[in-house]
Amino acid sequence: MCSDVRVRFAPSPTGYLHIGGARTAIYNWLFARHTGGKFILRIEDTDRNRFVPDALQDIMASLRWLGIDWDEGPEAGGDYGSYFQSERLELYQKYAEELIREGKAYRCYCTSERLEQLRKEQEAAKGWVGYDRHCLNLTEQELQAGKESGVKSVIRFKIPRENRTVFRDLIRGELGFENSTLDDFVLLKSDGFPTYHLANVIDDHFMKISHVMRGDEWIPSTPRHVLLYQAFGWELPQYAHLPIFLAPGGGKLSKRHGATSVREYREKGYLPGALFNFLLLLGWNPGDDRELFTLQAAAEEFSMERINASPVALSFEKLDWFNGLYIRSLGPEELAGYCLPYLQQAGLLVDPCPEERFRYLVQVMPLVRERLKSIPEIVNLADFFFLEEIPAPQKALLIPKKMDLNQSLQALEGSVDVLRAVSSEFKETDLEEALRSLAAKLGLQDGQVFMPLRVAISGRTATPGIFETLHALGKERVLRRIQNAVEVLRQ
Ligand code: GLU
Image (cartoon, rainbow, N blue to C red; front, side, top):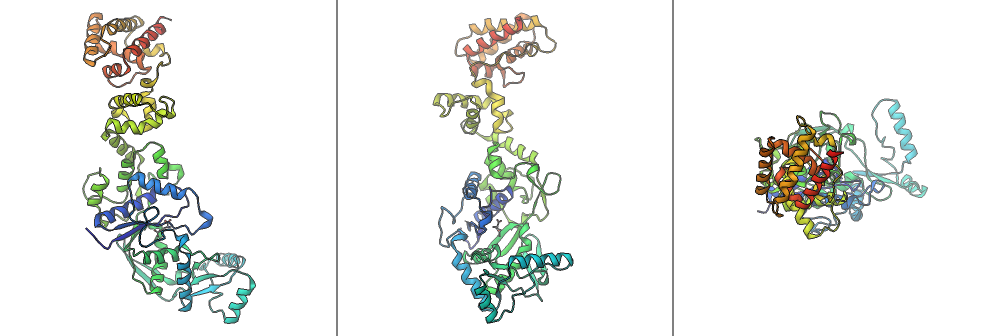
């Protein structure tokens, strides 16, 4: 399938990829994949003051981690590059000059002090705030004087104040703005760099962008962009502004509500599929109650009609729920791959991990998978599998409710005897038989044998199934741990 759809994700490298940005990227990518169009990554790096050196690497790594690839852009190339705005300065300068020649823009020599003073006065007068067109009609001599004054000029767009600007948004319908509310914004800054507005419009035009899908915080900028398209005589792209994210329960989302960058979620051990799915449903729905989508399935289903305009409140419980679901869908090998770095960090496995230890990790995975809500939990849930010795369990834990010291001792000492007799393979069926008959012989319920045993071998009251756990630990470690527990009880 081939189509004229060309969409872009145009982040500014001013920080790590925000989850809102990631959602924008995902929707653009899905739309491109759905329509057989192209998805372009463009780096809007014209604000030198806010530039963060490792942001670009983070953005690309985070997109790739989520499964988002780009057809054109950094490291992908393409016919419409450069895909870095900082490498396209001449183009912006040329078109800004063209607007001057056509009387649609003008050079402004106002100093920052003057502009500051103006703003103060306007704010004090509680009226319209914006540039007062002081430099709109400079004569040749005044322009020359400006040039010689040493003050660096900017180029401002001349807003046709009398009109109203209307555009259609695919999600919100028609949106209209009075031009009189807009001021003559800067197109080209004094350092020769374009502002966001100019570069964004020129690039969308020359990169043949068909649909501009972005966060709705950009709606106020859109009339400026529409006016620029009109000034250049270029065809408008279609606009679709995505609903804003709210904090859980409503209100503005900020750092204090939790992680805001993709990287943080990744570091917290969330799986890419879970974060993808979570973000997918923040603003889009499939029209029924299905919630679980692979990237491919989402691409097949995706349509702009199903994006809603109203703000979406984040629910981190939902993300955890997705994450649990994705963890349980992983095979042991894959899950082991995700868990490994956390176990290494905790010192439970060495780095690099020898093959035979990794196999052991894979063997443990099916035992813990059901109880794992997030990957880092593996450390607390499964540390006793990787430790040679565990700290001596507390006496109180070794004597479960409704049991006494003597019964616990009987259960554990009896276990040592019967387990010693089980062959060293420690097959689960053999273990089960041995322990159940021990319980019967002692006149205890099965659980009354299993519970002290569980605490003895793991140090905790909740573990995966007792026979699988015993099997995974192996005969030697099990006998040693039970004997240690017996000593605790005898103290
Ligand atoms: N550079 C803008 C940003 O950082 C792009 C906005 C747009 O998509 O037009 O989000």
